[in-house]
Length: 241
Image (spheres, helix red, strand yellow):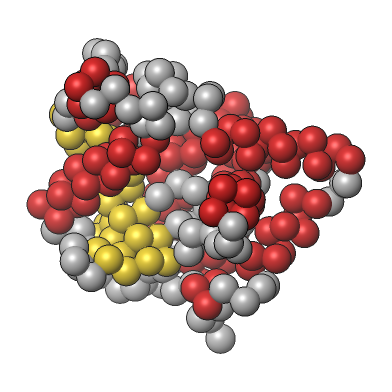
């Protein structure tokens, strides 16, 4: 996928759900994976021509599990003129050593979210951008059906009144395979997720299940996404036009 196509998908999502307004200061959560770095490229590219002027801050939450070299990401951000911040934490030690969580993902995600939110507020941001893409939407919906017994998917835009922050997800129209292609084409400085649970999660189970269903029923991934985006979930009602 070329940058122009990425920007087209991103602009469509931003416009459909009114994700960005004049003067917004947006914190971009950078995990070091392909998704978050693709999001950084997308929002930086959008800055150049979007009618509403906005600024970006890149933030990585360090889990403290191993020494991580952020130099390449720091250089990428510098080349874009985007300030880059690393929040040092002991989340990994708390989750895996002290608490010894059998299902660590929920607690880890909650603590990372808290650290990211606090830094975003400290920097004066009013919005936070997550890099969830189209496949994430479908996987979340499937996990909700299987493990919770309800039809649900995360929202394109969510307002957290306690923190007075708005969460946006500008990549919801971008497929994961396109993110992989973008990463390779533009040689994004991705580094391996240090989490011991990486690859052994419920999300990974849902991803593999959808892959099998797609092989047996071509087009099912798109139909599942359509069930979310054009269904009855109030948060997915488009606001443009």
